[in-house]
Each structure stands twice: as C-alpha cells, then as structure tokens.
Figure 1 (cartoon, protein in one colour):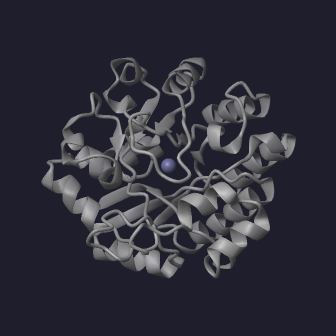
Figure 2 (cartoon, rainbow, N blue to C red):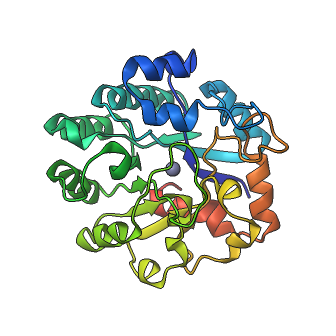
Length: 285
Ligand SMILES: [Zn+2]
C-alpha cells in the first residue's frame, strides 16, 4: 500500500537559490529562523529540493501523492508567490501532487481575494497556517471569513500547533491549545487538520470529541518517540512528514520519506493513517 503524505513543503526556485538572503530581502525572519538555520553540528535543518527531486524522493519511499502545504508567511506577497508556484506544480503533476493555499489575514480583504483566486486555480485547502506566528488574533474578521469559505468550499484548513511540553528551539512559537478547540467549536462546518499530532491534542478527549478535527504526524520523529503512534485517541490521523525537514538528523543528511514511513509501519500504523484517511478527507479516489 503506497503512502499519501499530507504535510510537505516546497519552495519556488527563487527562494531555493539562497533561502536566507531571500528571507532577509522579503521580511520573513520567522521562516528564516525555522528553516534556514543549522543544527549544533553544523548541518542544515532542512533541504530546499526542486519539484523533480521531491518526486524522486516520493518514488524512493512509495509515496504516491503529496499534499504541498504553504508556509505561514508574514507578508501577503509571499503567500501569492507560494500559491502561484503550487498551482503550477499541481498543473504539471496532477497525479502526484495536491496543494493547499496560504493566506495572510492581516493584509485585509486582499487575503480573501487571494483565497478565492487560489482555490479557483486548483488549490484544495488552506495551510499550513499559524495565527500566532502570523500575528493575528483568532477573532480576526478576515480569518473568520476564510474559515467560513473553507466550509462552503469543503476544503480543509491545516494549522501549525506547538506542543506546550515540547523542548525549546529557535523560532518556537507558543500556540495555546484551547484556542484550537474553540475555533473548531465555532466553525463546526470547517474541517481542521491540526499539525504535529495537534501539539498533543490528538490525545486530548476534549479535542478528539470534535468531529471536524483531524491530526497529522508531521515532524513526529523530531518531537516524540515511537510510542506516539499508539497514543492518539482517534482514527482521524493523516500521515505527514514535514519534508524537506531532515527528520533523523543523527543519521540522515538529506530529506526523504523513507525513515518516517518505516517508523510508522514498524509501529503498526494502519492503512487508514498511511493512505485511506487522506483519500476520504480530500475526496480523491
Ligand atoms: Zn508546523
């Protein structure tokens, strides 16, 4: 059974050429902290692969489809750049790639226009977004308009969630967990995918009781030990890697899917988690 990876990031060639310089020129310091830094040993935290390299890495680990997630950019024009790039990726490889749109609600109504345009252009969800990193409150009216549209269009919204108990790292942003439960209650027709096991919400009875809340496993190996694969109190979990993050920095020097896929399979992850849930949630066949 091939895998569907519901949490992959990819960047346009102009970002990949010199990510740190691009971030400095475009006012994206938070992304630069998280994605362009090096670990203590000097190795990079992630790679910046091309779409062709992504497809080769998917083939190497029997990943049949990847959902490309946008980044929670701090500037509207960077959301537009990412969305245009992803629409091109999906047009070029519709059998292998899907993509979600990114938006920056503080930009105002242009963010709603961009949401409409991106979905008309073939993107099939929103995310990965992070109100706390993008500096807007959960009651921001533009944000709430986009959550309402996501429900009308029946497309999911992927949100970054930080486990409050996780270790400190550069660029870590606190994302208080009750806010996600409140959002899911206020927007019952909107489907939320809470990234990184929902930052521990996947084992919260209160969170899993909400039928419109799903979880992904992005960056699991960097955050939790293998016992986590048995820990979720719900079946609404999607395999996600956070590629091109280097997920096993002690033994890997380049991004790839095989390590986390092997960890999941070794821990007894179900076919639903690895593949079928994504088909069900995203409406593929
Ligand atoms: Zn994340």
